[in-house]
Image (cartoon, rainbow, N blue to C red; front, side, top):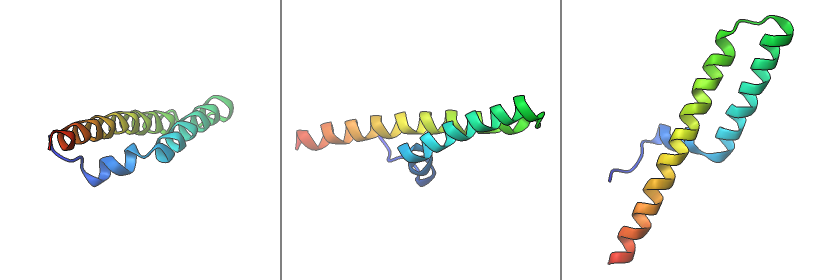
Length: 72
């Protein structure tokens, strides 16, 4: 298994994922309340989705690495 890319580590960081989810909620509210463009919350939702996927990928890699090192 290959180590995830640095971008994956950035977006998979729990603090960044939480920030992206909060940004998605905020932009969705602004779109609903103030007639903002719907593109902004959609982009934030895509980024938050990528962040959660990246977090899962990092977790899988860390589990695999621990198991691999336990074999030695």
